[in-house]
Image 1 (cartoon, rainbow, N blue to C red):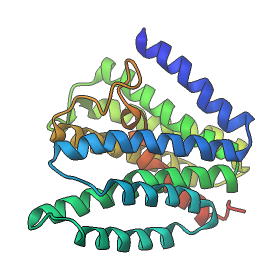
Image 2 (tube, rainbow, N blue to C red):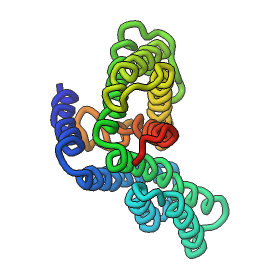
Image 3 (tube, rainbow, N blue to C red):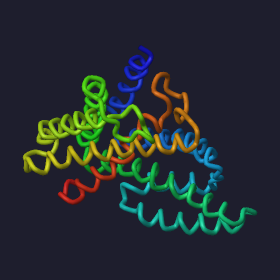
Amino acid sequence: MVRVISALTILPVVIGTIWFLPAWATFVLAQMVLLLSFREYMVLARGFGAAPYRLVTLVVMVATVTAAPQDLMGLILMVGMLALGVTSLMTARSGGQVLLDVSASVLPLLYIGVPLGTFVALRISVGREAVLLLLATIVVSDTAQYYGGRWLGRTPLAPVVSPKKTREGALFGVGAGMAFMLACAPRVFGSSPVFDRVVLGAVIVVLGIAGDLFESQLKRGAGLKDSSSLIPGHGGILDRLDSLFFAAPAFYLYLRLVGEFE
């Protein structure tokens, strides 16, 4: 019941921001999510014994999301990498710890900053319909995975990382995501090849599952059950957006390739 109440509280805010408010509101929402996600990420990083360069990393992440709609993410990331390298020279850390700290500083740029940047770019350059199509595909797939796994799940998908996930549940999720994208993509983009829609749905779902497992891997390595207790019944922001963080860049790249960006 707690999970349901939390979802019913959060979903209207997210959907309402994307659908009813101007594009800048989605940008603000993404930056808020970035700050909360980075806070949770820092807890995970400390669990591995890493000490990311907090200020520089956060500034580059914020700049990455800001620059995404102007196609400047690559430039910001290059500048950010140089800034992190210089910062590492000014610390007292040495040996293998330097590599751990630098790596832990670079990861959130790619893991959190880039996905949220592509999310904002989708809203500004393609439109609210595309963003909601992405979110809905992930939600439909996650729901199918959960109930399909409870119904027929027998074979663990990744027993070491996430013992509760099953191959059967994953197959339900992939099928549901493909069917949803096949049915709903024409309402957003107009006519498109059936094969393209099916493949896009499958790619989004498979990457979403990979994102879920990746975050579970980080939590297991850090000795944590959830990334935080921010959302009752759901865990933290990273727990709820792990699928989106892997799926959003792929969706963004696909729409760039097919010329949907203005």
